Length: 446
Ligand code: SAM
Ligand code: SF4
Image (tube, rainbow, N blue to C red; front, top):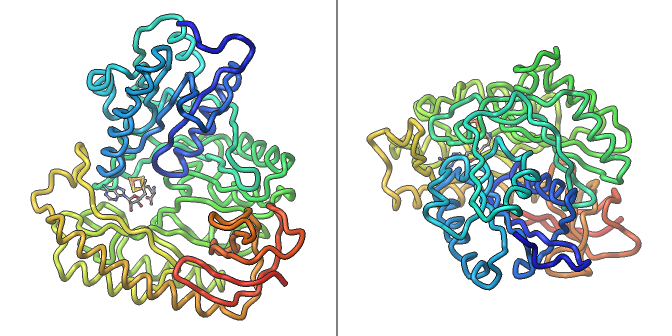
């Protein structure tokens, strides 16, 4: 197949990414590979020679949106028959050839275990017009590292492991991302050092369950060892990580964070539910009593740390009383913020086969109640910060106003303030907090 632009101007690609940070980082690695064969990023889909849709299938709502998007792209294919359209990532892994059958305008379906093969798959496609399906059932022990083109200049994601072994009964991730594979410590530290040299100030270590880092590897290292090694990279100002599984968060990690310089005082510990019966049905591997003790330990070791969580409402069989237990749990643990989801039936997971699915209107009503309670708590916690001075990493102008700057505290709270002088993206500044809202703090540079 001939590219439409081979007269000196670069060939262009566009990525559309759905889902989590892991997917956003995967898209950066797709971009890195395409750059090695002369493709440049375009924000304008209409100009692209390649469009890649990086997909998510954690909830049905995401899947519906993505199928809609794939359908829409047919229009561009009619205008430019040489356009390569690729569907990659989690949904590609799950639905495989079904995607090619349903959408004949798609050229490439590439699963999560094949991401590193993009260059050879594009070469294959440029040679012939035949659709390419590259979906391995299993991952290689460790896929090779590939080049990355980062979206940001201040904060960067660093994957430390791929896959998940937990099989929470509601979750599709272990089926589409495979078993846990930890990257070698040396590769991770080299990547962080390079990021520091390139001027990045903040890194986020990524994995589905970062606390089980190293368990699958021959190296005698664990997550605390990795954190300690990362904390030595002195060109980086802040280290974050996600996601922690509460069951695997241990004293060694808490101690390491307490004694570190760069690891931020923010714990994201997805609890999912505040009822022991539901937690058992979810196969989370902990009960509320254990979780409360863990939170107490963290708060004692790292005073002032923020705590956030994920919660699912309407898990099969969730009674009104069990939902009330979750509300009560929220009121007593008092999270800084919670990401709340309606349970979504994922075919192939055990919970999808449970008989007592909760009706959608009940799930929606519970979500609303949960959000109302959490919003009040978030606001009350943020109001306690009014009058305080907080260290903020400047990210850049706010979305709506070039004269307002946006940054985050070490506790991961968003702060807005009027631009005063020379503050630049990447600077650490001190902001005096004047007002608090549920999701944002506002203040002034001091
Ligand atoms: N590995 C991480 C963990 O265990 O917390 C996060 C993975 S998952 C992509 C992110 C969040 O999506 C989960 O914490 C959970 O709250 C939510 N989630 C996963 N499967 C879901 C489902 N079937 N329905 C609704 N929410 C779901
Ligand atoms: Fe899904 Fe549970 Fe693994 Fe998180 S830990 S990715 S929720 S199976």
